[in-house]
Image (tube, rainbow, N blue to C red; front, side, top):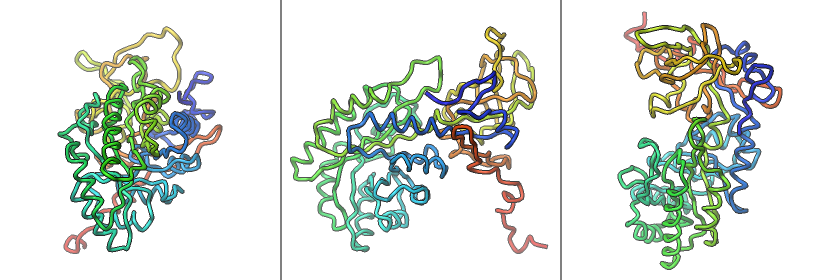
Length: 422
């Protein structure tokens, strides 16, 4: 469920007209719903046993207002860079609720996390384990860690967002896990605390989770038999969201939670989860305006003012996003098939192909749905296009939470070398 709906024929975010926001900030822009973020976090958290730590994955959407909203609800944070660590702390998430994932943690990033006193490092390789131990020991600390173990489970998702297969770059091979834990226990700067597993993103079936969690259960029991005190089990994230209203719906969080209880519920561990997309995706839309309606050889195009630099998922993953007009059309209105494209000089700048839509015209507003995750965070300035504003709605209020940068600011980031100055 999200809180974008039609009222008196106009799309609203909660109680605010999208057309009103467009008049105030111009297009394109991202719009986020506080009510949706809140509901999604609570529904997910309630699916887990008491005492679980729900660490919102910042890579999905790292705007300070989004993080702060979730921090006030009690969320922790899953971060994958020093920059995300700084964002989480600044938004009010305590270090004691932060886990640090990612395959390429640098020495300065690990030192900053140790100085902050984060809850856990999810260690992804043996070289990282030894580097972390050296840094922590040099600071007079022992870093709490869970080894991310790769279970070689097919998540049945897009190849570019699967992370639990043996050919992926993530984690330690399953067959090496017990030996690496034995090595970790001997390192002076390491405190073995738990096990970490994460098999991918946008997973729409429960069976891959069940298989991975069963392996994690076996590993926890084996490690305890080896003498390790395993008190935490990080199950990662990855539960999918409904991008396409006509496709089968992904499992509900309560069903996901049921699998967790069934498979690992008796292990007497603190469970950690890292949802990102599930919290943020349906909480956001990308609003754009039609620049031109163009008829080509056997095709019709809607050229809009949002581009692949603003939302790269369709170009990067062939991802589907539902698209709707901001001004509702009468039931039974004739639909036409359009390619919805942006102004960027790339053939990949395509949001939808042969999409059935009302006959929108120049100046009409449309909304690209389920854009709150992996939208603004992956945006760029290709073609010297400005980053789009981000807006947050709360009831009948809205605020700009990231303004559109002006061109002078963007160009001013470039500095001429001395020999080009006149």
